[in-house]
Length: 563
Image (cartoon, rainbow, N blue to C red; front, top):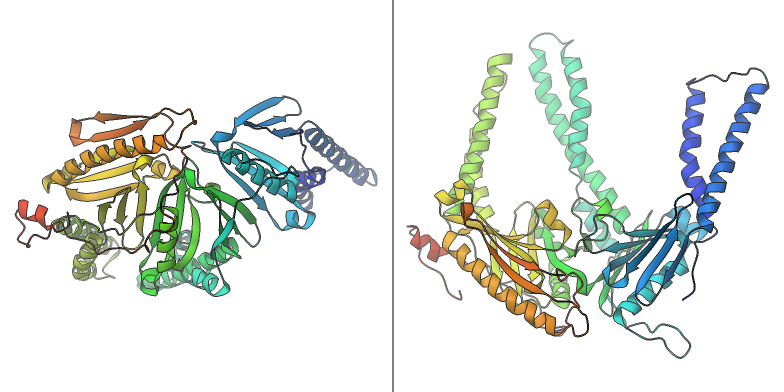
């Protein structure tokens, strides 16, 4: 394949993009009198025009040189890039390492017909390579060709690549987009408002007569809370609508392809053989309305991670839960999860946590009354004790884990509940942790770590606060299933030239243990299509770990059926 260059339109666009901010800064400095010209009369404007012209010439010269010295080529095995104006840089990126080819276009780029292309690789914390900018047709060609080369597909008689059959899995209509906006919140806004208005509130109270200050504080805090909730909802709704306008998800061969965005249009792919974890996320409002979100995490990179702290892409931003579950079954045939809850004694642990928070709030109010005078009932937070008991019960109720034939499934959270599906052969490490408080109740947490980016933020699949004896059994069972799954998965990768090994690393210090998968990390494994016609994905009822409760002295009746 011949060496290719960037679009000629990239030169003026990059000049305007890079030079616009500098010109704006100079104009602002001149308008505010930041510096005065050394010349007066007509010489001053002439000097200014001359300097601006010189800066413009330098920008154009640099960007033209960048355009002329930037070249790329997509070969059968690598993606090669030569770049650099003053210092030359040559890169050869193996195709097997490339996870995603993502295309983005803002409003101006769509108007002139150019696009930015980003190449993301496994294990990379940032974009491996980018093309700024090529024509949109060239961007789509690169996306198609790289997918064809990785599949090993051949060209047809006319020399064109044969496209796999595409099937639309999901389209976000206007009604669902409105629902997505209504169910979205940006919780960063209340904090910004509080910081902004708290200073003004303190300033105003200093000029009020004594005795009115505490009243104004109560009124001001109430108003801030109301404004914060409203602003959080408005900001969240606006961001959701702008990000997921005209969202479309298509299954093409062995990958998911998505398009979304109003102001910034994204066009990318999620390869099936890179998927590490599937997450079904919801909150109380979504659960009440029967909706959920599907998140897809790939090895070391999730599309959109530069714009999201989570580091994963919403494969479906919002849809009826039944549609989400069918889509999960289409991607990873899971079966019927039958969740196993933690032992019921964990509710005492959660209730104790909430009581500590309530006690701390009451103590803080009591201290404030002692310093500023009695203006609030310090014992008011104690009224939340019954609520703490209910919250502890629901936190226990929404936790659980399940071992399927090919997957481990975990569920955690109430206000933000996440159900995670992890194939056994994707497991990198199994971590057993037991804090001093857990050991007092005979509990432990088992975390399933994958090669995905969420593991960095501590958002892995985890069986939290399960019985300590069950944690030992779960760790051993995951070890066994990991070995079996990796061996079976390796047999389906003939000719890949990748050797996988599974080691077991045990640590008895502080009760921790790990099961570690070494080698390539399975980040480039080819997924097996072994269940497209599976039964509908139906979530089973969660079972209580009453047997463990009985061993620990709880008086609930055992209910260990199906274990």
